[in-house]
Figure 1 (tube, rainbow, N blue to C red):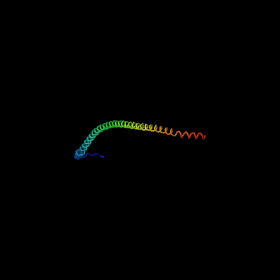
Figure 2: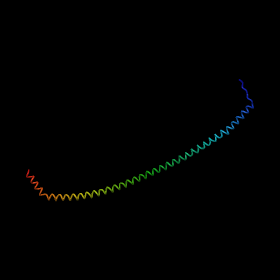
Figure 3: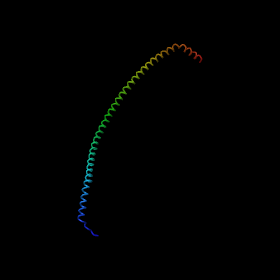
Length: 142
């Protein structure tokens, strides 16, 4: 096996083809690919900055929402407290009114009962003679 050295013209031709191929690859492939990669990197950097700003906006919105919820809870507590006080006042008013009505009815009942007591006493006194005669008859039977 022997090693032969190629022709210098052939070597020059291969070198020129190699350089031409490298120039064409650089022009048509590598530069557009590197440009695309740079654009992609810039786009990613821009998106990361946008995400960071969006995150800070989201945190600000979250703080505002939390403040609104806190205010809403405080207002709800005040409304519930006010409604409770109003309901208690209304309840107390109704209870007092019912107590007055019941006291008036009880007084009417006492007056009616007193009248019935007097009436029954008068009836018993009127019928006392009849009761005495019936009682004597019963005692005599014994």
